[in-house]
Image (tube, rainbow, N blue to C red; front, side):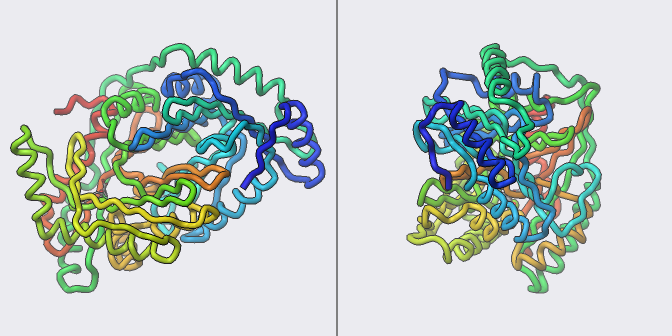
Length: 469
Ligand SMILES: C=C(O[C@H]1C=CC=C(C(=O)O)[C@@H]1O)C(=O)O
Ligand SMILES: [Mg+2]
């Protein structure tokens, strides 16, 4: 945890420089101020004029917080495998913030030193060409960050002071900040990516994989395996994250919206699934699994909702997630509250079975400890976990990259939130890959699971500019 200082900025900068020399290690100076109202997308767009390729955006499902980062002041990254990657990043983060000098009036959640990023779904799967640039864990502490929390707007400026005194001066950073703020007061505009065409990758092989997995599940050797597939979308021009975000923002108000630019690519999406949120001692998680279409009118929609709630196959698919999340959280969380019956979560293109999870944990417990325990839940992995992951590797024959992995943020005050990066894709110049998967159980039918993936592709297809229903 960090200690807040209420000194003036010049003194804090000098103190950070002296500290960097003393400990012979970079020291972060983080300055936080309340600002006037800023539009998140305009800030993101303005950030792109100086820091294209180094931006992120996050908006939570409850509309309580938005974070928009531009530039990088420090990267936390790990190439370690499995749980080690979470612990390695956690260790470096703790060390980094323990030396940080923070100038702020208060400990506003989501301000000051904050790391945003994601983790690959499966660290044991080799990194494919399309995902190069993303490590097993890749988190970024931005140079500039807008935090919108309710009605309040905050701007964080992070300057890393180096032991040899090199690096940007305080005056340079403050000048750049003013320029960024000026540009962010202009409305966001973006280029249209032009003509679009889509190509399903290995659709027939995917259905065959569902059959193979169903056969194995019927023997009782496993209970559930989530199989995903991808579609390649091509454009006549470059598809920018500004364009896609603008669409997601308008079209998916009930989802977590995220974008993470890294080395010429951008991982982006609108997911309904929270992995874990930590707000002081309060812990929230979500069980989300089991799906059905939306109806054409209210009556049909309610009928489909009832059908989903009563459907044995979907209830089983869902219950495996509930059991696994309960077990993963039971060691660290007190007062776990998990309703016995799921409810419906209705999104634009699909409805899901949904069980909210609440609990409490010591304020000092790191959110990454919980992420490590929860990931991968059976909403995107399977049961038993280890065996299901091996089947996914064998049957999917693809690299999920950050799709279905944890994506989100953590601050230096012990707050944070990670979503499961579903309904997402990777933008790469004039093309994109989008991903969707389904929980396969012994009673799965390949054609209906395939249709389910088609529904799950729709949010990204629409955001990419596809003229869909
Ligand atoms: C794996 C995905 O969805 C998961 C989350 C909700 C419902 C699911 C299902 O019904 O199969 C999946 O477990 C995806 O969207 O790519
Ligand atoms: Mg399903």
